[in-house]
Length: 126
Image (cartoon, rainbow, N blue to C red; front, side, top):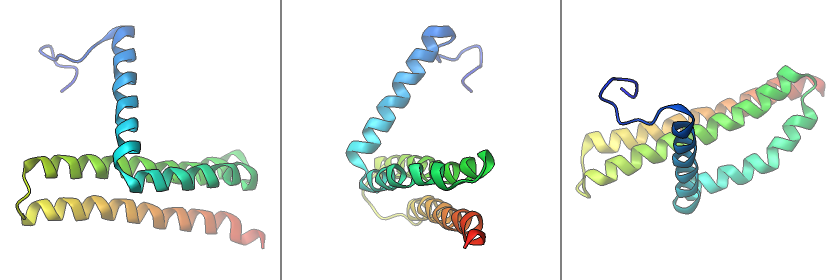
């Protein structure tokens, strides 16, 4: 619990800056070490301007852009799960494999969500 009385979590304006630095370190690590994350960022950079251009209203633009951002967030969580599981050791473990598979499944489901959102917003215009 970050807000408990015995927490070492930073508080106040300095704490916000420390949290920002840690978040940027996490993004940097994901960029350097995770090829899937880099690919999804490239797709985001390609599709985000299209989302802003093709969205007919603010809600549509938010939906098209938001579903792309969810994929990036899920990939970060998946990478964190994989890092923790790999830290436990190289031996094969059924639960470790399941954790990795489930993390990957989250990313896959959100990619299907991107396809569904974009299709539902853009196909009626054809």
